[in-house]
Length: 155
Image (cartoon, rainbow, N blue to C red; front, side, top):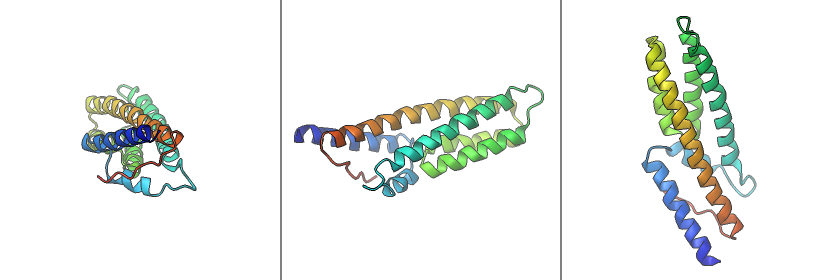
């Protein structure tokens, strides 16, 4: 059992580090993790879950707004991009936040093709991050179920 826990903890550390090195996460995610304790063991998963719900809603709103060919309200799209940038920043979703900067520039210059391209990229990145964080949270659950503690990972 100790061997299993040690193996899972090593896997967790390596996977977490890879998410930072690949640019999926930044220091804000580390700060979020520091707020989690035994009284609220699912805090980060809950916050991230709310972030992904928000992403889906905002991406849907932006897609609908960009569907109005010839009559796109770029200020509405830009407002949604700004909200997404803020929420991605607050959870440490580095790649999503970075794409939002470019997306906002496309909105400000009313670049329709650029906005559509950015929306597609944001959708891909958010889905990729969601899958990777779900894997990370699953590893956490496996460690706890095996009787171990979630290791602190220093980046």
